[in-house]
Structures are given as C-alpha cells and as structure tokens.
Image 1 (cartoon, rainbow, N blue to C red):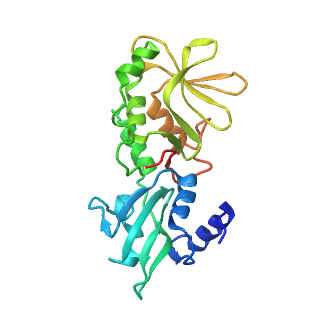
Image 2 (image 1 turned 60 degrees about the horizontal axis):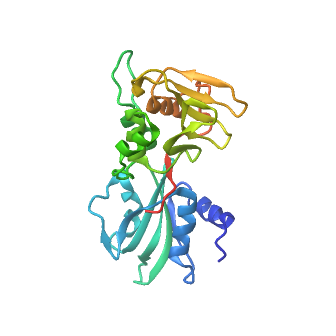
Image 3 (image 1 turned 180 degrees about the horizontal axis):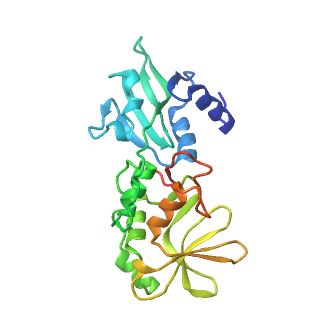
Length: 263
C-alpha cells in the first residue's frame, strides 16, 4: 500500500468515530508512525515491547488499548480534537503480530466559565481546553539566559506555555514561538506567536511588569489591534469565544495542541 496523505485520510475516515483496522503484512509500522507524526506531531508511547506505561489512563489514550486487552506489542498515540489516534502492532486473535491503526473517542474537558473578578489560572484553563495530557515538553528552558539576551523579563504565563506545550501550534494553526523576537523596526514590540495568515501575535512593552503587557495583533497589512489581557487568557479566548475578532471557535468544535518535535 502506498501510504500517501490521501490514503491515510481514507483509512482514518473508515474508522470515524471509533474502531480499528489491521493493515497489510508488508506495511512498515514505523513508516505509518512517521506519517501520523508528520500530521499530528510527536506521539506518546503507551506500550513498548509489550510493556504498558503505568501512567496511561483515560486522559492519555487508554481507550486505544481497550479492544486488544493484553495483546498490544507497541502503541503510539496522538490526541486530535475529540479523538485518540493510535498505531503500532498487536497480536490478532490467532496470535499473529500485525500492524494496526486505531481510533477512539476522546473526552475533552469543557473549560469552566470565569466569574467576574475571578482569579483564573489561564494556563491551567488552556490545558483543560486543549485536553493536554503530555508531560512538560521543555521543562529545562533557561529563561534567565533568554531574558538576558533579549534584555527584558518575559510574561510568566508565556514561559509556562512554552515549558508545558513546547514547539507547536494550537489547533495546528496558531504557532507558539519558543522565544519571542523583536518586530523589524519596532523595538517595543515582541512577537510571541503567529499564524499561516501572517498575523503576528505580540506584546507591546508598556511598563516594567511583563505580566501587564497588552497583547497586540499585527495584521499582514500592519494594522494593530490591542487586547488588555495576558498571553494565555488571549489564547483561551480565541479558542472558545466565537465573538472574539480573531476567534478559532468558528472552525473547530474541540481544540488541541500539535507538537512539532519528535518525542
């Protein structure tokens, strides 16, 4: 089988919303894993050489293992919207090890509404919105060195977002910069994210407290729109608020983070 993106689409469509399929014996499981990783980011390993990760539970893809009981040899998993997608090898009922593609339903926690004046942890809210279940992707970032090189402290919620999610994009659309950069010709504007539509998501460096810097969206035609909120709050709002001027809620019912790096 030629594993093109079209062929992968067709395979996944046959399993929507849940199920599994054994692939031809000549299919290379690593090639399938790489094809899925190219689309959905770095996978989590649920089972390796027959040994199940003891931390795997309903929040991290256990539903992918349920159809096979103790017959899983290897299983990699991706969270994608309201689905778990997995591939690897399992022993079929006759004991033959076979390549499998499996899809399972994924429960995405709904974010709680924020009461007026409530002190909200917006990074925690963002984790809930995206159903993020992986370990911190970049726990060892030397923020002191980064801030010294940039000549400024950075917002604490942004640093937590990079530490937690790592290199990737929310809804495979809003790319999170791993280090902000100065916008050309404007040393008071730091760019922390961007989109394929060439919008730049920035902070205006107003004042000495970076946690109070406003978010600025600079469009491809150099128009600026200001938002008096923090970084994580801004991302939460555009993910779930259909009335936000930069909303993504009109295009996606559930939300996820696509990590670009290999696991």
